[in-house]
Image 1 (cartoon, rainbow, N blue to C red):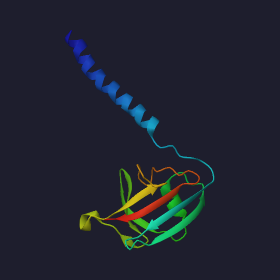
Image 2 (cartoon, one colour):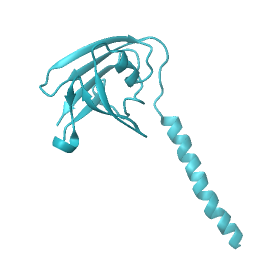
Image 3 (spheres, one colour):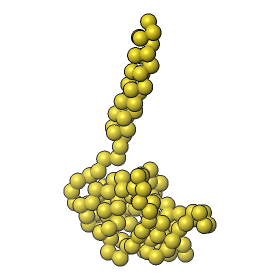
Length: 131
């Protein structure tokens, strides 16, 4: 009887982890292959907007940002991907003044970082300085 309880105590967490892993991978954002046309709008700290129209094969936002002629950005790499801190020479530092770069796709707040945010044909991205 004690052995059965021990086995159950080990098996239940393993099964739960496997179920959660399957759910995570099933709901993970899917990239779209092939050519697409997207727009990236950057709204700086003065409220000025610069628009970049891109024809790309990029599957994720960071790749599209790399292809946008004139768009510059930098940040800190982590296990979770790139945390964007500077766009077009404007720095947003939450630790200094609670400012950050907010990312939107088709007027909806992005649920993923730039490394995992999928790009689809016709998407309009907005990178907005927020304080």
